[in-house]
Image 1 (cartoon, rainbow, N blue to C red):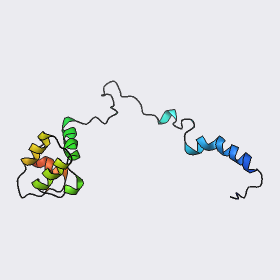
Image 2: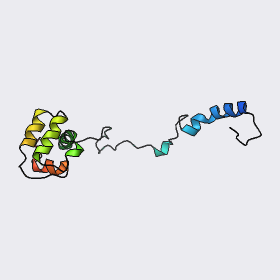
Image 3: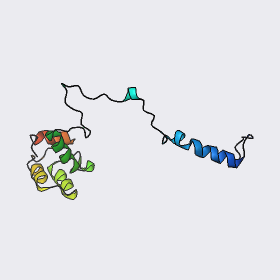
Image 4: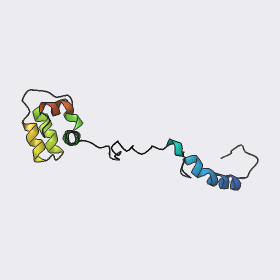
Length: 120
């Protein structure tokens, strides 16, 4: 492959490429500047959490959503139960979905969550 660079030969071009590879790919040295780093929480503030700090209700909503496949929505109680069984939902999630009224179609996991009274 011709490079159009007549100042260096292929060997020297290869060596130069190796020298700058880390800079070009962003793997050599940290680029973050100290003034861009987050400051620690103040004395009167709670410490920051790394995992996002989901509350119990958010964790339960997320857990419910993991056991309802996207293809089941929109869906009624039977479609949701079938999807949950396929995804190996635990007994308490299956029991909660079984409490949903018949004939109602749900478009989102949040709608299901609200219909369950937020109890899973």
